[in-house]
Image (cartoon, rainbow, N blue to C red; front, top):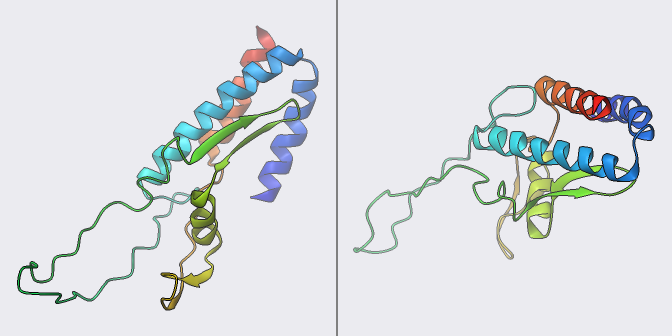
Length: 156
């Protein structure tokens, strides 16, 4: 992924240098918003940037907490449902460049899954090695979108 970032950075830096400050910020903001949308859609589809599916959640044992609970019921929601919202997945544009990433507590959770770290499940709970799930990364379509948007802004 670092090679992709360096290639885009080198290629885009020359194009951005030709633009005025306001044109550069407008172009980067448009690219950032489009990148966030595509990242959100990919995370919602539970896919890594290379197109492979995320590792599934670990199956939980049904806990029998009492007679009023439904036996064996486990609430299953899509992974990262809240994390992919604009509240956590931010776009930051500066004069030097563009950043699309997670903020706050969401950044910690995303890093654990992105890198496949071993962390505690709860504060005093057991440790678990989370499988690597690439939340952020460039797909081929995103690289092409960046290139197209940069050229479009240069032509304007």
